[in-house]
Image (cartoon, rainbow, N blue to C red; front, side):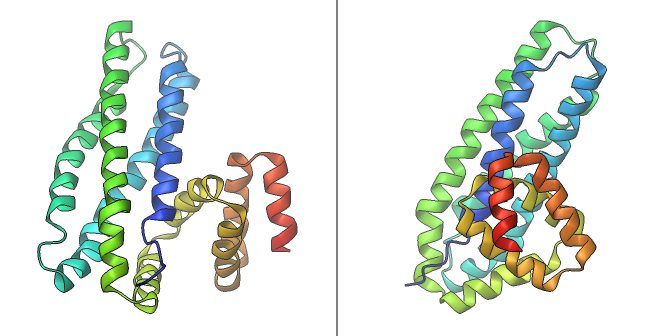
Length: 216
């Protein structure tokens, strides 16, 4: 049975950014153009990762699982369709906010997002406790590593940058060192520099300095 966890890293990143958005949504002053713009930017990053993740799972991870274990992906794909509908509705509402919203409108959006957050967290919990096990039982370490590499290679750099920005702060240093060492060895120096700049905005100084000392 494989020991590779295909969902662990991306799900940690998604839990990170979803939680961050929920907290920011709760304290944002919609009457402040700067605060509303910051909320919208964070939302854009979050919805970008959510969109990328669902397509990655449907078109790669779950597709390959379905080919090997017919019927195994049906529940997750059905969940994805339901969650995507809610997700796109929230993204559209966020994009239309102008700062003129009433406190009731803001609160209703907050509640709607909180409900989505709870549903999404339940969904990825099920993926990590059910679907992950099916992947480990039916694919070798080499196969799952190959799947991961294929997914990484298809990502446009701006999307990969976002993933690293939110995954690395949400995982243990040893996990991040393995991830970043591989990226550093294969990526252009400028691209790696952009990753470090993004991480500096998300990591506490102590964690950032510790990571840099071990990557040197």
